[in-house]
Length: 213
Image (cartoon, rainbow, N blue to C red; front, top):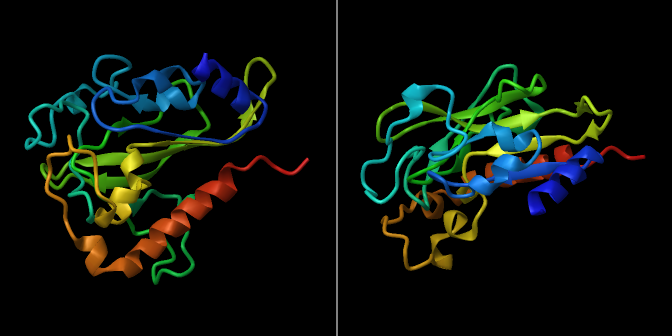
């Protein structure tokens, strides 16, 4: 029922940020219209690229694919903005003019462009620190009319909610007891880079907002 309601919200022009984490964590969002199909899990709605059906992070044995290791909680990962550059990835305060870093996480989920979505594209990619494999970080879906005449709002599928949570921005906030991986200290050592992450969040809020009536 929740996913049906969120789907109706987008059908009325509302914007959605849909995010999850490793393996099957958050797999209920698969049924959210459009953006749910951009998320790939382990037991359902798997990545159509079967070469991705393999464990990336090897340290946390209890977690299986998709589990891309972009780095330790508390560290940054370098982000590549896909061409052509999407407005979500712009950062006027950066020397490159782009968003360059996201918070890292030891086991991110999988996102990609679903075959059914002609208005979707990958906007940011990362590199696994465990295997060197590239993987998608964010997929943007543009506004448009669906086959039923609904004016769909924009949406973003993000590979992990750890890009946004308190602990990944500041490890001093602490974490749940089940988190086993030792944190890094990159964000504490270079807090100025977090401003680019905050710019990305602001970009999301502005871009996802419905157009003025």
